Image (cartoon, rainbow, N blue to C red):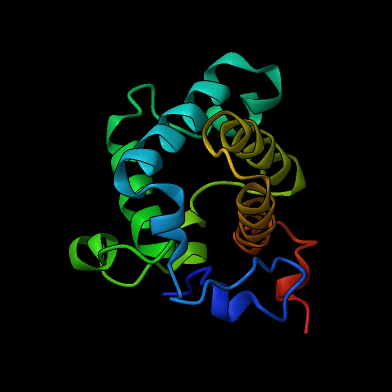
Length: 153
C-alpha cells in the first residue's frame, strides 16, 4: 500500500520534514483516535456543505460501513497497523471506485470536504498541507471519467 511516509515524501512537493526517528504520519496525527475524528468530520462536511453534495450523493444513507472502511484505510495509509489490508486485501482504489461516476466535480467535492475536515481536526499546518496534497493525488487517481489523464497513454 502506498503510504505518505515522511521519508518517501522528502523529494516531493507534498513533503514534510523528516523526524530524526522517522515517526510515521499516523503517530504525528495522534493515531486511531485522530483518524476516527478526521473521518467523522469528513462525512459531516458532506452532509452539511452544499459543496459536498455531488460526492455525498454517491454514498448510502447510512455512512457507518463506509466510515469504517475509510478509517481502516487511513490508519494503514498513514503508517499505522495494516487494518485495511488484513480485512479487505489490496486497496485497488480505482477498481473499488469504478462503480461510481467520478470526474472533476466529484473529486473537487471530495477534496473540499477533506480539506475542511483536516482544518477542523489536524492542528499542525505542515501536516495539514502535506495530507491535503497527498489526498489530492489520491482523489485525482480514482477519477474514472473519459478525460482522466491517468488513462491516456
